[in-house]
Length: 229
Image 1 (tube, helix red, strand yellow):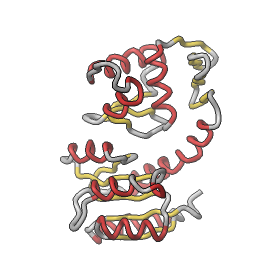
Image 2 (cartoon, rainbow, N blue to C red):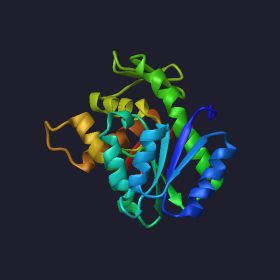
Image 3 (tube, rainbow, N blue to C red):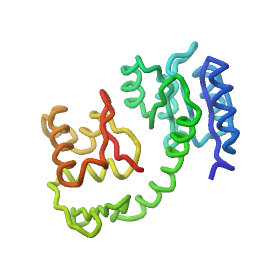
Image 4 (cartoon, rainbow, N blue to C red):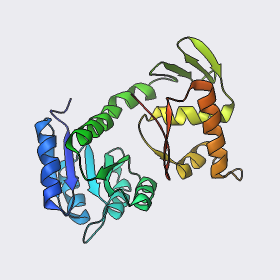
């Protein structure tokens, strides 16, 4: 799977770039490097990577701004973007998701955990392609039928309220992707009513009660994701 996939690593700390690049290369990925946001954008234009790893804090242009600019360019609309963040930078994680990040990886870097996360993110390409080709989404032991608004788990029918179903379908359509509360509000409730974060939390709780606790996980301070095991 990794033989023809390209990953761009953007970080001003050369030791971290070298560590990540070494482990990615061992897995068979084609790896490219840059050391600030501006360099990262230029390199991305040259090599068109499948995934970009961005540090948050960098000179000249930080990762948040680089991600925001690239997401505004058509060629990077579907490129996976992952942030590197220190554990104390929760605000950076939220800002990253708000500008279009797909995931984040906490420092200090643990090579095995890093590779597991990167491999899982890149597997989404296949999963999302399968999902987009049909109104019936089959994922793990769930079948989510958008036409009938019904969910089946191991052939057992589960009836959800309309918003619960829409919420589940949104999360499951991009497994392992973190959706911020703002993204969920815009996608499910739009701007037609006044909805608070509490409303989302209540719908998530009801959804877990009906389908089980093992599908939707909470990303503290950010939002929710469908956990693809």
